Length: 183
Image (cartoon, rainbow, N blue to C red; front, side, top):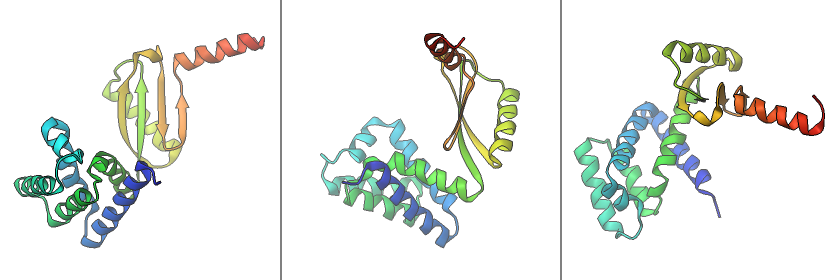
């Protein structure tokens, strides 16, 4: 059985390729953002879209009405109806994330996750962006989060690269060294 991550990547890749053919994968991403955002904001809508307990025709009607109200193009409208027909609407958030990664990669951008122990100033974020961009030789789109459990420092993840400068990790390393008697 194919995992949901693999399926989301396949759907996103197909949508991305279609977007390249018609001229703008980023425009399709914006439309998909709109529908995913709407589902995220309205629990009733999400329940109808993401739950196969509702009849397929009812979900198709909701998608058609919503697409019309939001002014979505025929490509995204058809794509959403395919997801309904295949009972894959629950993959919509993952497909959106995968499509964003493909659009960013095509534009020479990479996604980076920054987690800090405290909120960072805009200047600190820009310094981090510059240092990481030089390290990976690419423009970065940052997702900045705060996790007080880090105690201090920053953890940065760009693709497979993980840079962990958190106090929590340093303390764990020191504890391990003490256990081994290496200090």
